[in-house]
Image 1 (cartoon, one colour):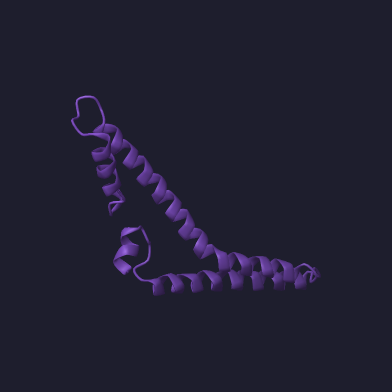
Image 2: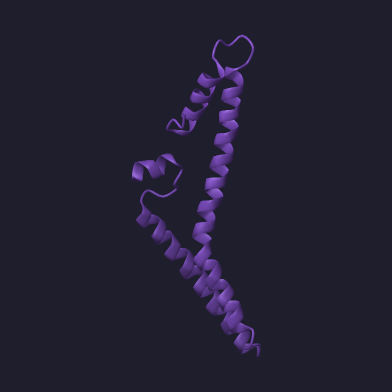
Length: 115
């Protein structure tokens, strides 16, 4: 399972490393939210403090998953471009490969064969 995740572009060595990273993100955002809420309370803006702290907590909870989505999107775009270029060169004039063979070769670029 871990090998499949690594081949798919998963940036962490194990899922536990992802959770450790998520806890670090959450802790940083929690501390930043608490400090900002404390400063607002000292300045007399205590009404806004819980809302700002809630925003920081929300960002801390969603940030690790947003990073994974961004990495997956970049990898998918890169694989699409590489596969398109490989497919395009395989069906270029003078190449004896057919369309089906070109699609099979392009699908092998990302790891496993899809076709």
